[in-house]
Image (cartoon, rainbow, N blue to C red; front, side, top):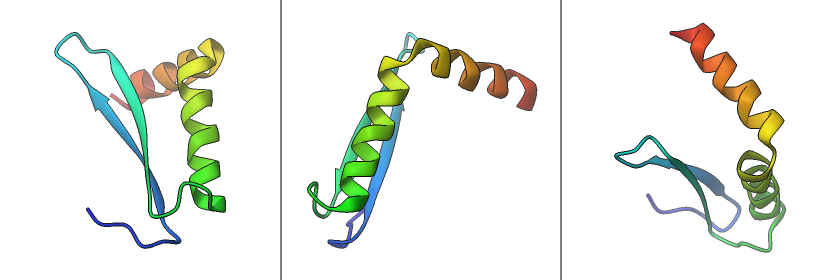
Length: 62
């Protein structure tokens, strides 16, 4: 996927052990969208309460 300068995206990847990694792709990492994606990625990876909340929502969806 090719992103425009004003676009950014979170890329979630799972490995064979079910571990999730979060990456940010951006046309401009210093843009508002790039900065927001970095903040969200850090929240996903660093906030255990938020991770638990996400997993609980996933469980309800299944």
